[in-house]
Length: 378
Image 1: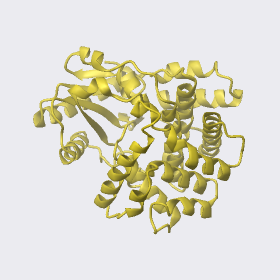
Image 2: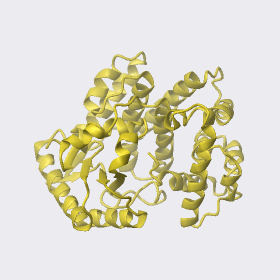
Image 3: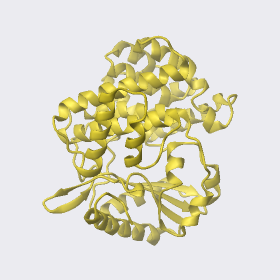
Image 4: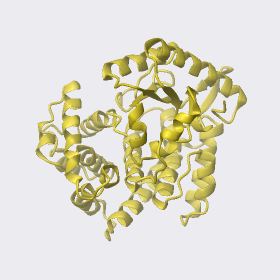
């Protein structure tokens, strides 16, 4: 199978995948296993260290089962799969204060889906990509059960919210993680703009080509091409990493502002005012495509219940999240945006809607973001 742009790297990935499959199959009998993400579309990242191929993207797999699988079983399986290929299995979004280590912060990300739910998947980037991913166990016809969808524009916004979080994690961390997130910032803003314009495709190589046809600054096109090559061929290594990191942040901000202003028809350029309008208006439409109705926006309160329960597992009693119907994830994202643009008092104001404790501000925002993010809602 073709996992990367390198035949040598593909051999290493193949070995890892066989080991992971064995761990999963020894525990359960799935209907199918699908390799998702970069490796599932021939664009996985890797580098050669002391003569050995080291995969850099996490292994992202969807396990299709007849019955629901418990969260504890999934977590244990993820840890065992990572250990079986001699990787640490840690999530940097969760261990955001830890120094980046190429082996420790590599995990096997398992998403379990019941077979009957495949045809009901939401109109997300993940569903779109899953339709063309690699089936590594069972018959490829399993992909026929996944619906043809048009990706929700909300996914473009969500993708960029995640980039702001990653930039905050990388600040003050190693040069290696700054380089990775600088590159990912540019490749993901490319994806976000293509989603928003209705031109998204699953392969990184193809996205770069289509991106060149968009009405965006030539400098941004150049940087997206540079980042795509760094991801595919150079293991995320870049020259002048700090400069590229700042450029990536600037262009992600530019892209997010462009998308949000167009989506909500906002005239203001000021982030404080934009966030005020985002809080007021976005929750009324952010989940419409997922709920298949513009009148069920209040259904996002269910996510607040889930967030509250997830918080308890991390010793956070987030009672305030149950006092409003607006999704906690959006509120945290607004706080993160304002913090990133040095509007710290304003960031605290939004964070207080969820928790009394707002200090130290960066750590509080990143912890709550990680609790929400790690629920794997999409």
